[in-house]
Length: 273
Ligand code: IPD
Image (cartoon, rainbow, N blue to C red):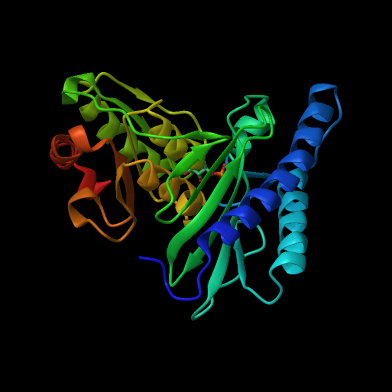
């Protein structure tokens, strides 16, 4: 049921517009890199946790466009920080999700923009600069890839389930994550580590993955993608909601295997990752 006064469709169209504008900036920079132009790179939490000048430019553009289209609404962004408002809409932005892919020339990266109210995503878009694909959703209105309505897959058994995951930048944590993934490997069809959480959640929405699980995501990684997965019919668990999966796990799964997979994740030590 929509909140009185919340126009999810309008918020979605703003998310799509702004993410598309930023994706064009990122696409041009990416094409420039492919042609040999260099891009300034810095590091954050670890030497492997990179941020490029393009991440900053993309976030500046998103913030400027939101200030025009939605003046006064707070923005929480991966690079510029910020805090969520107490009430009303907060915009949650990842200016390039999949920065390592972007830097290496792999096309799986996206600009993610979501509108949240009280920490709950009500509209969002993830736009892929390399392909131009636009993933979007508004609460109660389904999930879309360009003009096509999305629906999750329906694997019949856990053993036939393709699971996406991701690893943190901290060496210590990724060692625990690798142990967890190793336990899971023998129980499912296979595991993918594609490198952009927002798009991996969109992949669940499209049935390109049957499920996705990762510990330690930030709000900007999942805010748009988790709504897109949920609106496509996935069973979604957000960080803080399920101690059996680990306090900071993000989980999205096709309902046909959501329960057995969740149980298997618990048996593989998800709570201790
Ligand atoms: C990262 C990607 C990656 C996930 C990491 C995220 P970034 O985001 O989504 O797939 O495994 O946990 O931090 O750093 O590219 O914006």
